[in-house]
Image (cartoon, rainbow, N blue to C red; front, side):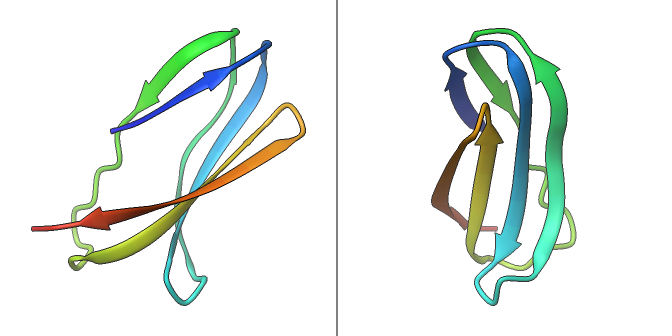
Length: 70
């Protein structure tokens, strides 16, 4: 589960990448209100490992690592 906070309403996009930079998928791309939001990363078919996700919202980009353990 990925949780993020938006200071003001706008479009939020979360994209997941593997460690080689290959795009795995787009978790969300939707308009959201100001406040805290959550989304789930459904990883069926992906191997255990380290992945990156990038959140794009209101002109701000945040990148974070996450580990998938099966």
